[in-house]
Length: 398
Image (cartoon, rainbow, N blue to C red; front, top):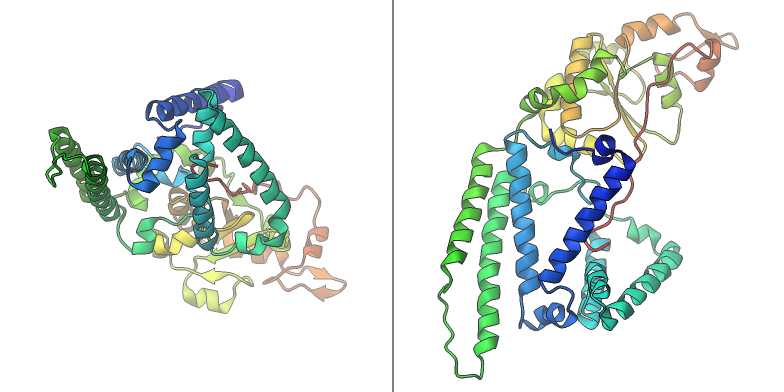
C-alpha cells in the first residue's frame, strides 16, 4: 500500500536521487508554465493574466481527486501522507505578508529559484532578499514566538472545519474551482478586449474546457459515492503492514516501562483504560481515561490522538488482550503514532507491585513513583517505546 518509503526501498543515495529528479521535474514544469517570469506572475494581481490561479487550482484539484480516490479504493493510506500543520492566525498574517512581497517582487521563493535557473537578474535579487529575510526572521523570532506557535492544529482538513465527509468537501471544492476557472478566463478575456473593439462574451468557447470540467466533476462524485474506508476496512487493507508488530509483541510494554514513561515529564502520556466502567471505578491508574472499545471506530474520538504533539504516547490497558489489540489496530490505521499496550493488563500490574514498599511504606500502585524502578533489576524489562518526534513542516513555497 502507498505511500512508499523511498529511502527504505532504494537506500539514502537512491532516495535522494529520486527527490532531486522530482525537484528538477517540478522546476521544469514551472518554467514551461511561464512561472519563471515575474511579469507573468505579478499580472495575476492586476487581473490581466490568471495563469497562476488556473495552474495551481488545477494541480490542487487533480492531486486531491487522485489522492482520495486512491484512498477510497484501498491503494493509499492517507493517514501516512504529510499534511502541513495548521497555525491559523500566523498563517493568515504570513500569507498577507507573502502576498505583498509577491506583488512587489513578482516571485515567491520557489519561482525565484526557477527564475535564477533561467538566468534572470530580478530572480537573483529576489532570492538574495529571500535569504536575508529568512535570516532576519530567524534572528527576530524570539520576539514573537508565542504568536508564531499560536492557534495550532496538527492535522486539520477543510472537511474537519466544515463537518462534511471528504467526498462531499472534494466535490464542493471542485465545483468552486470550476467557477473560478470560468471567472479567470472571462476576466482575462475582458481585459484583452477592453478598449480594442473586440467582442467579449460570457460563453465558453473551448469545448475541451467542458470535457475537462466534466471529468473533474465525475471523478470527485465517484470519490463521494465510494467514500473513505472505515477503520475495519482499513485494517483489512493494511494488516500486512502492521501485523508483524503484534506477532513479535513489539507493542506490548512491561508495567515498569509504563512507570518510567509515566514519570517522564517530557512525554505527553495518554492512558486509555478499556475495561468495563464498573471495574474502572473500582480501581484505575491515575490520569487514565475509561473508554468503550467501540469509541475507537469514531474518527471524532481518534482525531485528537492522531494530532498529539511531539513526544506524545498512547497507552492501552485492558485485562483481555484481544480488546486492547483491536483498539491498537483501529488507532494505527487512523494515523495515531506511538501506540502501546500494557502487558497482561491490570491483573499483571497488581501482581507485580503487590506487597512492594519504599522506605517501609506501601506504594500507591495507582500512581507509582519512579523510585519503584529501583526495587527491580535493571534488566527487568526490555524498553520498547520508540517515540517519533514530529517536526513543524513547511508550506508550498518554503
